[in-house]
Image 1 (spheres, one colour):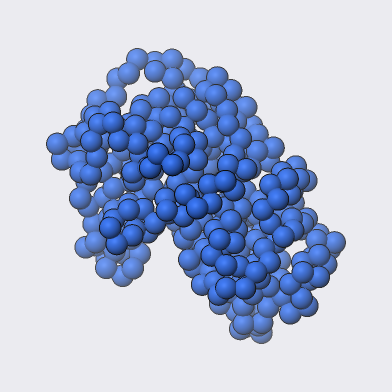
Image 2: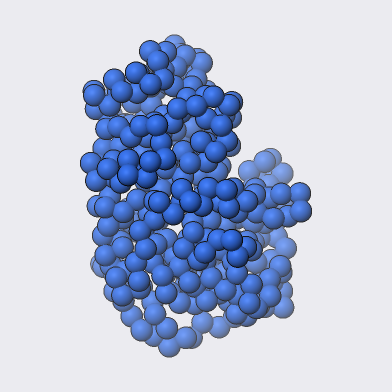
Length: 343
């Protein structure tokens, strides 16, 4: 069985091991077809998260169910699936107060995770981390379900009105997928802002957005020329760089909305919060993934992905397992907007 191993020293190794994954209570076994590289995976490698406290490595996966435990629910062998938060208990304080994404830790949702050919995924009546995938989505696009769920959560928190102008700080997968969704939902102009020239060029090449600019004086002038001197109606902060939040506050209009969809590692020296008061801003966080289901219990995010999959394909760089180390390197350097490893 092919496996990508993260050692305690923060090094990645490719290994061939025996399939010793035994089915556990409440879990289903999945043959992994593709797994995306998330920023949280890079944080593990860089030591910003404690590897000794993590039970899984890789969580953005698609694959085929091969075995199901008697106490698992919702799936049969042969079904195509991908990861996202699909079901929670509905009874804990978080669920009862509209925060199902805080129902429980995702740490025991997968074992050992998506960077291996086979993994276990939790699926019980009170917690499920898998959704069915239709034949209209291939394995690579399907592996984007979990990050697209997170981006969908950002888009929902934006409270978009048709025609609203949107500025997205961050040219990683989260910011770009959120921008793709907001465009589909009827946004006016959408401008993406980034610092890395390689990412800027790749985002421009997709042809998806009205403009892709640098986070500098020239870029800010371009934004103003497009959205007007009042500023953007909605600003998405998806960089994970704390000081960029200050730029977001400058870019949004009076009475506008700032959605923070970033995982920060650090603080903002000399941060000036006055614009929140002076401009009467609405600021909201968006921690995904969370539950979005249709009335017939399908994944609402999968339905959205079917509509925007052509754009999603434009941001993916696909790597075979033997090139997995390169996939992580390109994700870290910005050479790839979204690295996806296939098995």
